Image (cartoon, rainbow, N blue to C red):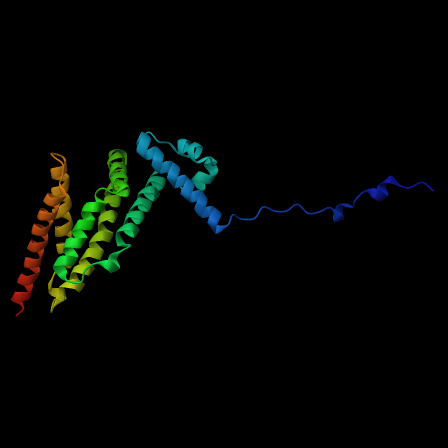
Length: 228
């Protein structure tokens, strides 16, 4: 009896089902996002915001345009994400050792200012400034919001630390946010104005910082005396 060749064929129902591609893991999604932001940030810095296209970012990140646009609908959205990541990195780095700050108000503020001087030279800070300057030409709103966000977190933290360290009898009577702004702008404004003309020596920075800190403490003490 002849053997039917069809007996050796696998019935359609018995064929192994094609495995569906699963969704990428959270780790893979985060990795893709990091690759995109790294590529965009480098292009924005090297070529400028205006000259960087989404196509260039897609190519540099070695991903499809569909993948890029699925995460960032426009270059503005991508730029905002790059700036936000830089700000977050700065905040995390700046607050990493806050628990080691001195207890008293004056030594605490002096240490804050010393750290602020270091932060002015951080790569994250310098890159953020370059990106904001580049973005301000075509994307002034994004540049302005990023600058404000970068400052806002530091001001909030400093205002809280000032209030805690001052141990004021009526803390609500003092505008801690205004004092934090005064300290930050007083230092950074002087620094940027001076560094444009000459090298800022550590001794000069320290001396000027102590003058600003003492002026702020005098304002706090004046408020304290007025309540007695």
